Every structure is written in structure tokens, then in C-alpha cells.
Amino acid sequence: MRPFAKNDPWGEPPWRIDFVPPKRPAPRTADFAIVGAGFTGLAAAAWLRLLAPKKSVVVFEENHIGAGASGRTGGMVLTESAAGQLSGLGDVLAGLKKIHRKLKIECDLALPGAWEIARNDLAETSDNARPLRGPSPIHWRDSGDLHVVSQVRGGSLNPGKQVAGLARAATRLGAVILEHSKISEIRWSDSPELQFAGGSLRTGKVLLATNALSFEVSGLTHHAHAKLTLAVRTAPLGERELEAIGLKSRKSFYTADFPYLWGRLCPDDSIIWGAGLVDPPTSGDLEEVNVRKGRSAEILKKFRRRLRNLHPELAKTKITHEWGGPIAFQQNFHPILAYHPKSHDGVVLGVFAGHGVALSVYLGTWAAEILLGRRDLPHWGRLGRAGQLDF
Ligand SMILES: Cc1cc2nc3c(=O)[nH]c(=O)nc-3n(C[C@H](O)[C@H](O)[C@H](O)COP(=O)(O)OP(=O)(O)OC[C@H]3O[C@@H](n4cnc5c(N)ncnc54)[C@H](O)[C@@H]3O)c2cc1C
Image (cartoon, rainbow, N blue to C red):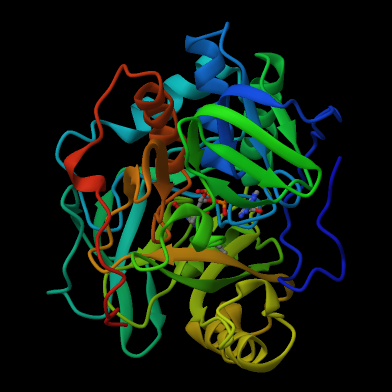
């Protein structure tokens, strides 16, 4: 069992990750190397071994499994990318369920649907949204009357259990996961060589699954922005309170206009809420951000006030956890699934712009199939520009 450290500078999320990969010596060679043990890297590792059990797979993780966004995420399951439906993407929820079944992952996946909420009835809703029939169950005071405008497929899962389930499946299928093994550089020669503190590893193909960290290694410096995004958990509410605030149906929710707000219920009727982005310091290093200090602390203070003002039933609600985690965007909000800028022996997958709980696992298995030469890269996944973000 691995809780996050009490003094973690990014705060402590409520999830527990009940799997620790067995310690192994680092091999010198492998058919496939994966950098990053979040949802993306772990799903790809398990899928590679499932499809090609004779090929060796080594996952390098700078910290511990789930230490990045995946162990800190809100756990809201969404079907579309942050840029809407992408051509040929397929049914992400059906795909996620199939992957969970094949890899024997239990993670409290519940799919009652999600609300799109807005102050303005003309707000741009998702490509697959259905307009709400009947009156809105939600009326919150938040820069206007925040109410339900449409409904989409989706729901929630327990992120700690999804991380543990993927890592357990990858290990059971024969992948080696090396924690506390940061890749500092990749030498892109005939066969890529990954450098880490204890030595180096030569490999056939590499998957870069480092999300908002290590842009120099993943080749994303000019293609994506990294920020820290914040979340809180409020204590469990009673049925009467849930009814009063409009969440009795237990649907997840997110705003279709700004200011942004998202959230979802947990099985014990506590609520995870999220909003707010923190820029990295001038060093560009997100790992220097401390959620208890400076800009993050200010944003969290305002966020607590905002939540308690949403509805009279929330005025005295207790906040049990506050934390942040890394998030990456490119200008067009598409996820990246492309060759590394320096070599076709490297594939980069990530930059889900806050829509990665389902998509990272679903596309992690695509990436495995691409590495095995069984699938082509999608046209929407190419490297774009970091560009100006208009929020
Ligand atoms: C607070 C928060 C709430 C969110 N809520 C939602 C939500 O409700 N719904 C949703 O769909 N999405 C949400 N997201 C986004 C979603 O969590 C992410 O898109 C997803 O977890 C990304 O997974 P990943 O594996 O690509 O990246 P990560 O989980 O960040 O994994 C990257 C891993 O790479 C490792 N790493 C980095 N550099 C190196 C290196 N050089 N060598 C070795 N290892 C390295 C890191 O330590 C990390 O473990 C949220 C994100 C955050 C932060």
C-alpha cells in the first residue's frame, strides 16, 4: 500500500495505490522501453506484453507509479478529447471497459453520465452532447446561475485503483517496472540508448509517456505547455444535501463556459471538485511548485470560498484534501500521439489537456500497437504548436 507523503509539495490526494512493483536490477537491453509509469505508460506496457509476450518491456519511472497526474487526477471519466470528438477515435468508454476486462482491472468504474453545466445557454457544448430535457437539477451561484445545459456519456473511477490495476497487470504479464529511475537523456542512434543514474539501456523502440514533465526528453519543449492544476475533496454529504444541490443522480459535471469548474461524487458521497491552473516558476520546473505556498495557496483559498458560496447547503462543508498535479496542453487541445521529433524509433503519447483518465489508457494500448507495427499514427495526434492558450 502506498499513500502519498504527508509533506508532498503537490499536496496529498485521497487515493491509495495498493501495489508496489517488485524491485529488479535494470536490464542492459530491452525490445521496448517506456518512460513514465502513469496511466499511459502502464497501459502501453501491459498491452505490449499481452500482444507480444516474447518481447521484453521495461518501464522507467522517475518517482513511483502514479506519482504524476494519474495518482492525483480527479477520476472523472470522459469520452471525448479536450478538442471534442476526433475522427477515427472510436468509442473510448467501450474501449476502456474492454481493456479493464482483458487486464482484470477493478477500479470502481461507474458510468451514470455527466452533466455539462454553464451560465449561458449558448455555451459551446461537446460534439456528442444531448440537450437537457426538463428543468435543471443544478442551480449554483458562480459568476451567474450555473445550471445544466446538456448531458454526455461518462462517469468516474478510482484513480489509485486504476494505477495499481494497470501496474499489477503489466507486472503479471512480464513487464519490468523500475521506480526511482529517471531518464535524463536518450541518445537517438541506430538503437536508442536511455541514460539513467544507474547506467544505460539499449532498446528497439521507446514510448515517451511523461505528460507535463521532462519535455526535453520527450521532445515537447516547443509543442506543449505544462501547468499545475488544483483539486479538493469535500467530506461526504447526506442524501438531503445531495438532493438540494442537484447531485442526487451522482453524475459528474464540468462547465462548458468559464470560469471553469468540474467535479464528481465518490462512492462514499464525498465530492471531488477542481479548477485553477498554476504556471511553473521561471525555471519552468513544475516540481518546484508547492501547493501550500504562493500563487497555488492563494488560488486554493479563493476556491474554498467559491465552493462554499455555490449553494447554501455547501456553506459549511468541510474540505478534507487539497492537492495539485501536472497537466499539459498544446494550442489546439488535441492529445499528442506522434513520432519523437528526433527519431521514428520514439513515439510520444500524452498532453490530454485534463481529459486523460480514460483517453490515456485507451490510447496507451494504441501506442503499444503502433510500436508493434500493427497500427498507424492518427493524423490528429501530430505535434502542434505550444502557442498562446486563451484562458
Ligand atoms: C488534479 C488533476 C485532476 C484531473 N482530473 C481529471 C479528470 O477528472 N478527468 C480526466 O479525464 N482527466 C483528468 N486529469 C488529467 C489526467 O489525470 C491525465 O491526463 C492523465 O493522468 C495523464 O496520464 P499520463 O500517464 O499521461 O501522465 P502522468 O500520470 O503524469 O505520468 C507521467 C509519469 O512520467 C514520469 N516521468 C516524468 N519524467 C520522467 C523521466 N524523465 N524519467 C522517468 N519517468 C518520468 C512521472 O513521474 C509520471 O509518473 C486531471 C489531472 C490532474 C493533475
